[in-house]
Length: 485
Image 1 (cartoon, rainbow, N blue to C red):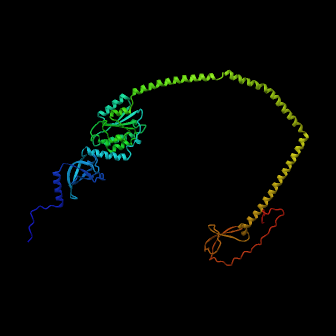
Image 2 (cartoon, one colour):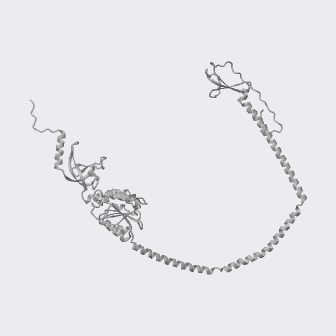
């Protein structure tokens, strides 16, 4: 007889898992847990983040869904001590419980400072804070860009200070300076100013200098300006940038990446622009000094010119000397001309005596004889050269006729080709019905192979022709053998 079953409710695995899940969620619907982040490798491809929270005695799995992860004021980092706010639940697929985090914040100022120091070392190692990356501010900017909240006292202080010192055009890029989206908005504003072309865009000019400003606050309030996205945007900005965050005792990471740090937003306006009245006074002072220097310089030049003029001879004395030299040259010119004419006349008379009509006739006769002899030699050389070339051309013509196949055809032979024009040298390669082209000495005929071609008689050996030895002409050059025909 079977034993009776105990009076206990039976659950399926899924029913039991769901019951445990409801119990934990009902009992721990809202919790705040303090612990150290462990096993964090960044957000998953799905956008969710998975890690664990641990202390000295235990650890608990944690998950941040994608929607909550984008709203976190602080991004999780390995080893960071945090306070997580969320709810407890279970994951039936692996029979474990976990916390679903909806908010995350560092556990006190000490944790923030540790995170800040670690981030500072990381960015410094990448060279974002190097001095050689910084550029000097323009002496007198025409357009000033300001990244700040449009409703706070900071922008009013900056505009007031700029109007007092040197009124220029100010372009304000409104952003949130605190909160979840603050870091992204500030980074986008800096990149937006930097993206404006030098010629401007849609009527908005490119700023000559950019001020990133915010009033004072706690470390948590200023944390947006410690985010990597903002620091990298400041370092990548090609426009000179001034950081004016908080009071003089406050500092953020963008102070290290900016080209210049101002103690206050008002101080940033004073660093960017000079005082217009002071510039006018300075220009006026320099103008007076320049005018005085010019006057003194002119007086000095006049004095030097007078001193130099005293040492120079007068214009009349310079002309007197040249005039005297000219008169002397004119006096010598007539005598020199007479002497030159006499010398030339003497030489001409001597030459005229040496040249007589009889001497000239003899010289002309001699020159004519030489010219006739040269003409005769030229005609003889032309005739001899022409005869040699004619003889050589005749020999080459005979040699060409002897070597041409047409000479062979004239002796009773024929040249057989196929229809493609290729010469046929043997009958073995022919087939019945193949077309032939036979060339004789007086023309061509077409033919067709009738039967099986076979040699009917053996070809006779060609009879060698005796070589004809040509006698050498007396006096001929051995190298010029002439024609063989």
